[in-house]
Length: 306
Ligand code: 0GY
Image (cartoon, rainbow, N blue to C red; front, side, top):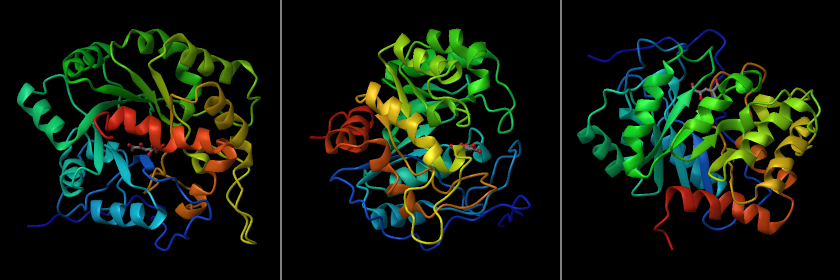
């Protein structure tokens, strides 16, 4: 029996025919933040999910990787799959070592399960604090999970919104493994990049040398919007000063990814080719781009590679 799922009303499907980026990615570039959704008939969405997406399979993700010119991908468990990592793990196994994963696990996870996830390519877990995506997990559960994964050399990916950082800061700094912050902690880009709110995020980055940042999701953070239809490819301008700031101050601790298939976008669905063309605006030199796209993600996810 197969299960069919009805998408959340208004759900925007991923862009079926992305353009080829004009910016040519360096050899060995890693898409360090993307997801797979189902397919729901093979990997049912979790009962506790807050949205039901369209299908977006591992094969479709890898076709996009090749089209854009990435060498490798990091597949982040999406909340619509809860703590059932099987769709993500299936994609990792199908990738022939070209994909690593970030899982969601509960404190009751067994050592055998953790070993199996590691063997499949998982190198981190995600703690999600975005209230529209998940019900809050007790901090003690998160601490327990962090202690359980530490022996595997994994890190914790954290997703939160800027307004929640003051309350989260002490907890984040107490996590006993490296941290990777999604989407720059979701700054409000109508505010001043030199102001106190983004300053609090930069201070978090300064507080520990093992905190990394994904300078991702201009399409999610931007208020000024996507590229115009007249061929203007350098859009999302309002996000540039924030991302560039992080890249220039922490060049060895930044990562970039497409966020395909772009869950929960309501304003527009980006052309992934145009998203890649955004990278030179936030990492203006070849050296910064090599660190962002190749050296940093390879060090974090494929430390044994060349
Ligand atoms: C993202 C952002 C979102 C969703 C998820 O796991 C998820 O459901 O990550 C979002 O809705 O902002 O990184 O993909």
